[in-house]
Amino acid sequence: MELKTEVLSKELESLKESLINEKKSKVMFQEELLRMYTQEENLLASHQKLQSQYHAISNSKLGKLTYVYWRFLKRIKRGKRNANN
Image (cartoon, rainbow, N blue to C red):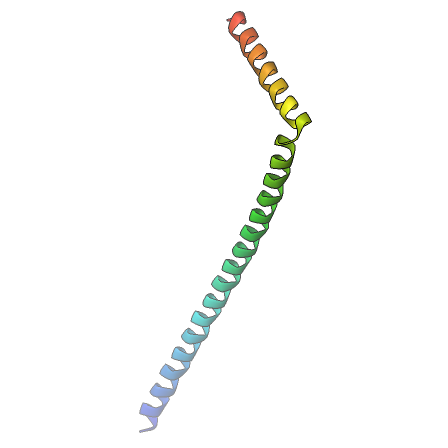
């Protein structure tokens, strides 16, 4: 009888330990998921801020003029590059 209870207690201890390990791994996974979620939120907020700034600049008169100038320069540089070949 004592042998049986000793075996059962050892089995119970091993099950407790495995349960604790499972819970630790679950908590670690949830912490990692929370960290990734927070990082994703920060990234989206940054993207929204940049996008609103882009729209504000592109809708202004000077911003439109700058965009046309950049396109013009790009076209000129592309022409020079093709002429060198």
